[in-house]
Length: 262
Image (cartoon, rainbow, N blue to C red; front, top):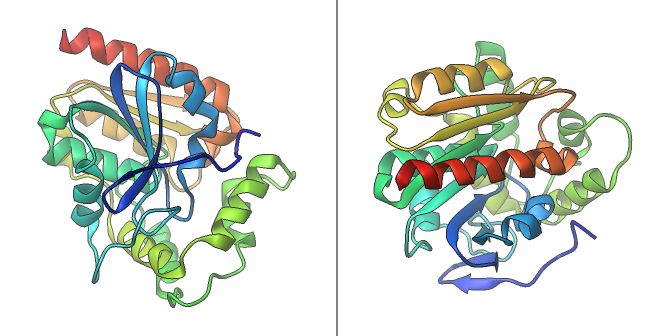
């Protein structure tokens, strides 16, 4: 039931699952997924916060961006749904967007959490992700088996089944546009991290081969109010595979951001 499709609210061209009241918390999923990827966190966070889990442009029920969008275009579109400051939490490409928002919209971001975020990929990782991006034609979606093997272990699960359904059903153009941006970017600059004014959490799994623990630790070391957490026996899809642990970590982080801004 956690991954069941939920009703949306519309914010112009974007759609989001909303719930609760209180401090704004904005959740941004990764490429190929949809707002339900935060199904393990939505109900708990909505007990104390106003949660907005957005469908990234070109995903779920959100419209695509025009032309050949860049990272700033994704960030600008999502930032536009905020009417007051928020704690911004992103996963994978969503982490890239969240950190870009914290850098360029500091007055809108009380705190930023980057889950499975990338930072300065090595040459092999760059080549692999660029090759995957180059293979996308915007017309058809490739068999998601290889992607799911990178994200999960071989054991079947409801989370894996949900991701397979989302990857098979995503708009091919929306997926291509987002993945090309994700592949071309190398994470936040060192200067952007050093300039972060808000608390920043960098969370990943110890078994994550792409958004590695070392990346999260290096980003946290550069951010003035940065902390890193590495979950044991976790990989890329930890908001789904380790939902309870991730929720508890995020709840603590959100409480800490309120203390920091008071």
